[in-house]
Length: 313
Ligand SMILES: NC(=O)c1ccc[n+]([C@@H]2O[C@H](COP(=O)([O-])OP(=O)(O)OC[C@H]3O[C@@H](n4cnc5c(N)ncnc54)[C@H](OP(=O)(O)O)[C@@H]3O)[C@@H](O)[C@H]2O)c1
Image (cartoon, rainbow, N blue to C red):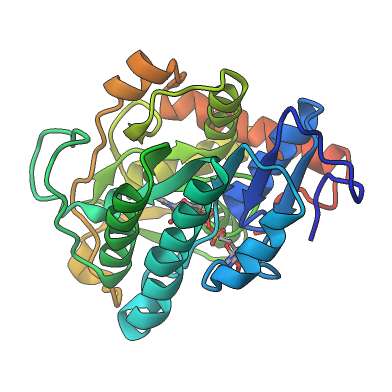
């Protein structure tokens, strides 16, 4: 797959390879890069990050200065039953990319998750806090982090939480479907965190590339403010009603995690401290509520322009 590069048109001065470009964040980044007029090479499943030969063959014909990796095994509950499959993508795949980046002299941007933490304390997590994942997904992401750090110095590791955007399945799209189709919504009110709006994340990541930053390391990034999934659902309903995305209001009931069991255990409070990413990389962090408003505007824009790439629920 190639989102924005006519064959052979990759500009040497940007030299970006967007990996996992068909996923939620990958599509957001592809849109952001394209909007900036950047030529870049994009791949998804057809270049399997589990296979070093496929990665090398792809890199051989191109000059790549940046690899931005959005490829991942993200099915959190499925990872409980398929830990090897999660590990193969989230750890081995990342190691393969890190090794390749080292060989070709490219910088690597990689994304990890708040699920590497146990979420059993009140204070927000700093980058140096000890990870202790509760789930096999979290464990596979942590293994990826460790392998990245051991293989490549010139990397940016961005841990994000509760990622959502106009592309791809996520909590906001699930709630919009529930509000449109059900008589009542039940949402957990004892898991706390901060959403991450993919569009602003993509803008920040593009800024990092544009600055050709060398401030490598691990960073935490999410929207400002701490909420429960229930709080998030209530706000989604309010804004969906205001913007006419849904027409009827249904009751939203707050429930406990015990009443909504999932295969994988989730952290109760996985709040990320984002001071470092703002101070060192100049990332902009907006309040979660204003980002949610921007999300609805972005969704409306896609609907108005009948963009075939606009949100899929
Ligand atoms: N979503 C969240 O709430 C969340 C929260 C925190 C952190 N993150 C992290 O943020 C990053 C982006 O997440 P996302 O939600 O955008 O993920 P996503 O929508 O699941 O996209 C991942 C993409 O990678 C592809 N892929 C899977 N295995 C591959 C392989 N072996 N080789 C090449 N491509 C492969 C997937 O294809 P298929 O769809 O065919 O599998 C998919 O297109 C991930 O690192 C994720 O762990 C996500």
